[in-house]
Length: 163
Image 1 (cartoon, helix red, strand yellow):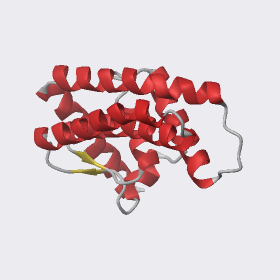
Image 2 (tube, helix red, strand yellow):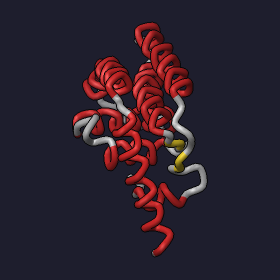
Image 3 (cartoon, rainbow, N blue to C red):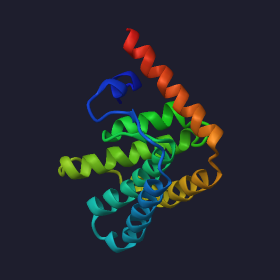
Image 4 (cartoon, rainbow, N blue to C red):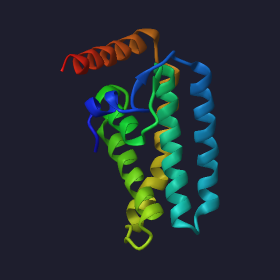
C-alpha cells in the first residue's frame, strides 16, 4: 500500500478541490450502474471482480467529492479512506475494498494467477453493502464534518511541505 505522505505529494494524488454535491451524485449513479451490471456478469470472474470493485470505488469517490477531495490514484483513495474516513467506514469496509482492488488487479493483469472464488463471492456481496454504506454517509454528512476532514488534509499537506 502507499502512504498518505506519498499520495499528497504525487501527481494526480490527493488534492483539495471545491466540495461538489453534483459530482458526488454523479459518482453514486456510476456506482449504481456498476451494481446493476454485477448479476449480468456472473459467468465472467474478471467482470464480476471489476464491476464489484468499481461499485465500491465509485461509491467511495462520491464521498470524496462531497468532501472536496480529488484523487486519481486508486490506492491513494483507499488509503485516504483508511486514514481520514475511519469514523464513517470501519476496518471491515477498508478490508473489503482493499481485497476487491487486489482481486480485480490479479484477474485483470495476471490471468494465470489463482483467485479464490470464495473471496470473489465476498467481494461481490460486499459491493452492495459498501454502496449502501456510502449512500448513508452522503445523506448524514454535515458541513462541520467536511470542514474537519479538509482541515486535517491541509495540516497533513503543510506538514509534508515543511519536511
